[in-house]
Amino acid sequence: MTPTSRASRDRYDVVVIGGGAAGLSAAVTLGRALRSVVVLDDGRPRNAPAHGVHGFLTREGMSPHALLDVGRAEARSFGATLMDTSAVTATRSSEGFTVGLADGGTVTGRRLLVATGLADGLPPIPGLREQWGAGVVHCPYCHGYEIRGRRIGVLGTGPLSVHQALLFRQWSDDITLFLHDTVAPTEEDWDRLAARSIRVVYGRVASVDAADGVLTGVTLQGGHRMDLQALAVGTRMEARSALLEPLGLTAREHPSGMGHALDGGPMGSTEVPGLYVAGNVTNLAAQVVVAAAEGTMAGAAINADLVQEETAWAVEGVRGPFSAALEAEVSDRVLGVRRHGLADGLADGLADGPADGVHHGVQGGMVGDAGPAGTKAREGVRRAG
Image (cartoon, rainbow, N blue to C red; front, side):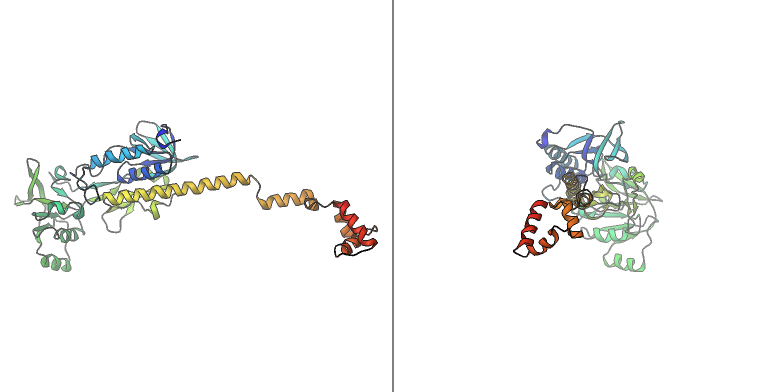
């Protein structure tokens, strides 16, 4: 069977929830391993508002949707099935995992990979969401180069905002940190901000302003307006993982305080056997290229897990219901010494020392005795055989 000839079905080796960089990379890896895999995707990638993907070798500036289109085509070329739907439930089943779909159907997989990404929680400031992914950015490594040299504001959302302001200072010498009644810098923070010539503004930001879709600045409570060309915001990142809670997997607070994520072990394994995770659902800081790599590694780990299971099945099939030790025990009970080609009578003779000389003859005959005893011994052994 060639990879492209697999028909759509409701049972697969692997069900992948999430069709972003992580999920599609896993599907390609599994398809190339000749696994049947289905990818469930609702078509709402986290980076959809962005103009381009950055930091992805050979894909610099490519639009997020174009990147996913290429990824889907590659996954299909290796036999993966893609379904434009959402997963609403995930439960254990006799065959592994059964995933309930938004349209009421189900799919079952021996293994389950969750690559659902995260949701960015934005401060409720008028005009902010409309600029998200354009004039409003979050990651200096994703967007810093594109806004280099501009007037950049950093909106205070938590303890990491000072660190964010110091990072963006690498791309511009015109940085303003808005405390937004949220950030309280330490004495050490004040020293660092001053040393890097970062302005600090007290008070809350009342709105994010734009003209003809282009960010122009922010307005503070009280009406004071400040011109900006870009605004960086640290979002509250929450893993999209609610459907896994019935399976015993719950997102936990990230050590950095930036949000909640699922715990993922080596190559995406979790504490739930057969359930794997990859991408932003477990790694909040992963860029697109990192999420893709994690999907590839998780796909390889899943295939190795399935190979191990199938090898165990094959060994059981060759061995059958009896182990070597159990067969020997049964043979001992039923056949006794006859399993060695000896008659039961010979065993009795060896124990009781019969008068016909078999016992004595075996002792003499086996060491090369001549004479009547040796002859009788050889005849006795032939009779026993």
